[in-house]
Length: 116
Ligand SMILES: [Zn+2]
Image (cartoon, rainbow, N blue to C red; front, top):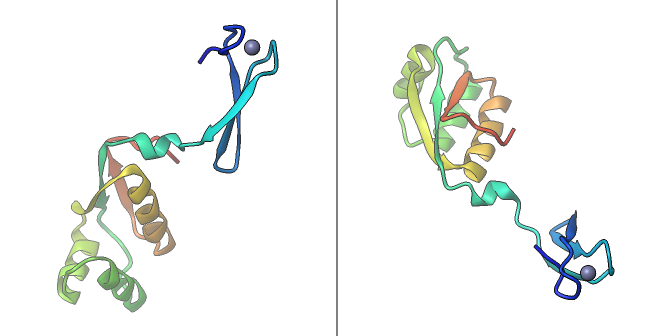
């Protein structure tokens, strides 16, 4: 982005949810809303459960809140793995990853997830 006054390439910095664009030469500046680039990633990521998870009541209970599956289906998924439990955009997959990390469930993300 170039400065409207002197056509110098502008610099920017982020303050919370605001992006301040400032010209390093003449000091002209304006603010825009900062959009975290993760919001602009439209890739649909798959969260895939891996095999060999510990199976305990807490994990099953938490997973029941997350997916519409029965107890025995959840147990089976945790044992055998290779199950796509979520297909989501980057920002949502990030939240899901947090849930699964907290539950100590082994999973992988496909394709490669760069927002970690
Ligand atoms: Zn300028």
